Length: 429
Ligand SMILES: *Cc1c(COP(=O)(O)O)cnc(C)c1O
Image (cartoon, rainbow, N blue to C red; front, side, top):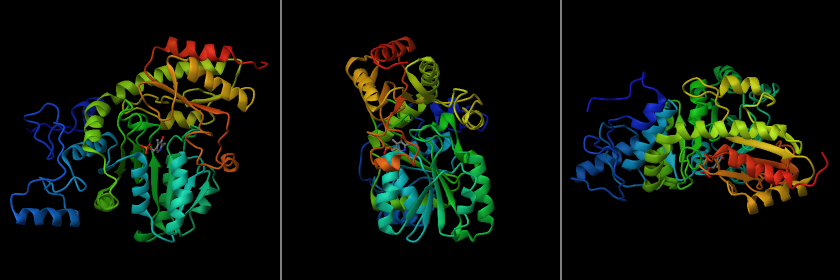
């Protein structure tokens, strides 16, 4: 077993074969790793058991991990982590039971009472709730700002700021954060700070996925992913992961997971590893192809007021999108998410979405995204309802915005269903 994935091998192939050899399982017997379930592991001696606890506690990485208990480490999650790290060129990856589990652990690891966070104004609703409802109880406060605004650089001078948090492509407004610029601003500020006071940049890469962007390559410190979305891709498992640029936090992240308990179930880790990761590039590219055609169709429709899709030249940051959103093979990767607004009022929006829920065959009213099935939802009333309505304006959220996650259906059936629902709307155009 000497084979291993060299730098020369393409991401598309690595996603299928992984590291080939791993200390977590013997691939010389299995083509596919077995789905195992054992909460505890047999230890051949007290000394080996004690050694396992010492290694976990001091974070030393041994050639053959001593497995003790599922909440510490487990073969399927170890293999999932190795594979995720490879997909985003991370020094290490730590998995969690959900995307929110990963996000909360990443913030726990990088802040303490009295620290402050600068977060982009538009964020996934539960992340907004975590930052505005729960972290303040621990003395960690967040300012929501526009990270693309040049005056932002002044805010970095505040020595209490320890974390910059954003989504590479924001949910749901599809704003793109200029991570190259952000990294260079933070680097300059960090030069003036001691090691203990350095600012970390954490980027939620769920919308872009590793196939659309690799923020660690751009210099950010941590990527967080909801594996529940496109990486699993089939709508069957929940999971999350933190990917780190260097290994200095790896141990702490595992300790946080051990003590807060937010592990991923081995069943979910296995399915995401075996089915999700190996097919992600294929699904992503087909979904993206469909999304481009849906976006173009909506943009031309007289009853549609606006369409936001990074693949359309009308996207306010189209140029930035073209430089940042790229597949590992260098192709433009605007993704599979679309936000659009109908002419008319909130009632028009509701009657359209209800008509889709009732009559569309190919499009389903449901939250989540990145799945094989096309999903529609209204963030202001659903995924982002944790943001109070008077705050939604500041966060660039319009209650009439409709979010589409495009699936793998035939494009004709998607367009027919949208066309039928639009045709029934009574608005003057
Ligand atoms: C869904 C989502 C999350 C949360 O992930 P879960 O797996 O549902 O916990 C975080 N960030 C973004 C951008 C998401 O879309």
